[in-house]
Amino acid sequence: MSVSVRVRAALAVVMAGALVAPALPATAAPAAAPAEGPAAAGPAAAGPARSTLVSPCQLPTPATGWQHEGPTNYATWLPPSGTVRGIVLFVDFTNAAPVAGELAGRTSMFSAAPNVFTQASYGALNLQLTFDTAWRHILQPHGNFAGYKSSFTTQRSYVAAAVAAANAAIDFSSYQIVYVVPPKSASTFDISPTWIAAPGDGVTADGVELRHAVTFGQDVDYWGFKILNHETGHLFGLPDLYSYNNADSIHRAVGGWDLMGLISASAPDLFAWHKWKAGWLTDSQIDCRTTTGSASTVLTPLGTAGGTKAVVVHTGGNTAVVVENRQVSTLDVASGCFQAGVLVYRVTTAVFSGGAWSGGNVPPIGGPFPVEVVDRTPGSDVTTCSAEEKALVNATLTTIGHTVTYGGVTVQLTATPGDNREVSVTVV
Ligand SMILES: [Zn+2]
Image (tube, rainbow, N blue to C red):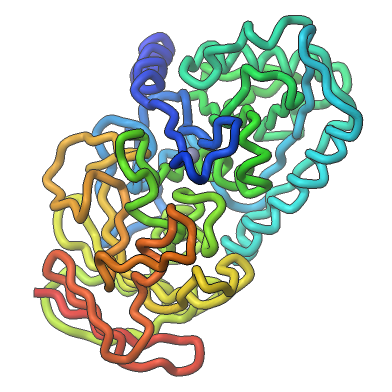
């Protein structure tokens, strides 16, 4: 990136200002703000394509913008591979103290998060969390950080204050991610945005520049431990798949089929597309189609390692259609709101995180989203499931002969050997 630090910071604020934190439908919302929050700040996303992906089914990186479904620029975002170490800090304020047991409770809850990445990455990513053992004191009222979810610089000042408060006890040179947890009584912090700084814009401590953080809020109690995975997903370059438009049905694009959509979903594994983008799937595990014609592929379940995980049809320009096989797994939990089967979705790099529309020429299924599931049963809800999930629970192809078509791509389920699924994909 050739832009200056000053320009990057200014753009970060502009981008942040455009990202209004969404809210869940009232029926699902607790008293506290439930939205986990967009990545509230950060630099422009333009940058070099990752070198490990050379497939013609890779989509082009947008010239400008925020998090997207194209190749991740790891000069800014954090590579999601190997051992990644995070320190969880607990900070209180002059006007907000924790209650007894709060630190232990948060520690216990978040301890479940690393396994989600171990499972989703087939062991390629080892997130190691270290929990601080005491509340560190930021000698200011929490209201001083009221802009933390919309201003890059305010969120930066909060991260810097937390790091400074803990620095006597913590060697930050051991960590790549800083997680900041306030007491529940610090009402300023309702949602949990990530903070991503370009090189030079970070917070320096113990000789290292810290550029990746999550500042948690009260919505932790609504979402549970997987909010740490969702927010850390942003640090790895994954976009939000729900809509930032409060007037929208915010989870209508992907329902509960990906952790970057609905955190509380029944099937919150990450799409094969995201696993490929993260480098957890190799090009050899993607059946890439760039020409017309018909061919069959056997897809192994997304939740287990090995085999062909997706058919990706590059339908032109910045758009692809993806086919994957979702079966019950550690992350896709068996329930009436998880209908195992073949899932088909459209991916585009013309739309950024949260549906911020950047132009382009994508025929939207229902609106401008980075990813949209192609519903085999449009208009049919599974009414026993949550409002966020019910429309797309039965999107999957579950029986031989089931077929969906989108954008010139027809996918038919043709055989069900064990947990594998054979699909015929025809491109016209
Ligand atoms: Zn998010």
